[in-house]
Image (cartoon, rainbow, N blue to C red; front, side, top):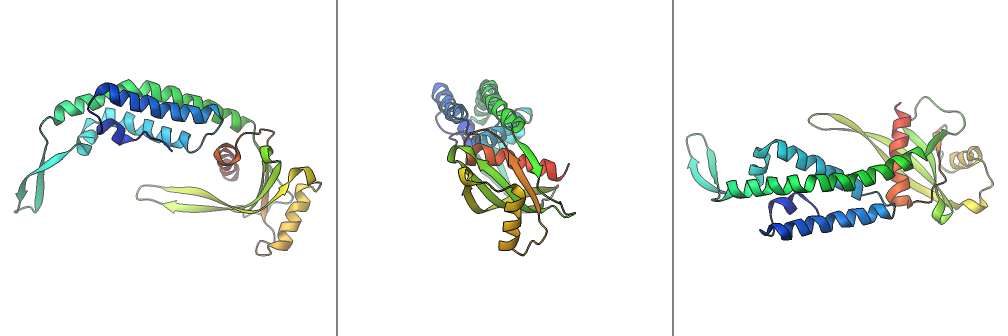
Length: 237
């Protein structure tokens, strides 16, 4: 949803005030999301942008690589293309750095608003185990409430391992099995777990968790993503 990106700082209007206006407008969009307790995707987008811009300020050569260049010559002996900066790039680079330095404190202030909400939500969520837990816990069931809709969502979760060139990291995938009205839920989490085992017999003894919270914040944008991070921390603590 964000109108802010690296290109906002390196391309677009040459007028400084016009660029500053675009940045402030983008930050207002993020702040509006946070003011309605909607964290994602705003929080992750803003954090990624902040980290990227900080890194670029510390290493100007990275910015130079994003600025326009033109082909200077072809080195046939070494089979290389040699580029040179377009005239005026040094001045453009300094302007970009100045704009980023102006924007970073404002981005940080908005980001802090989002992190305060994240930390509050995280404190108000508890992950509880349901019934007897198996040794294998990287796949199972998870019950997450959506207070605004008065529903309890029954999810299946699965941990996946991804490997990049530099590191390995885990991801939590969730699939909605069904949703039930909280007002009509008289069953215990244990009985809901038994019903799921009967319906989906490929997991005869599944790890099962419930998410406990009284918050009525947006489910998709806030409760679920924060709870997913908390469940991951619980699984690998």
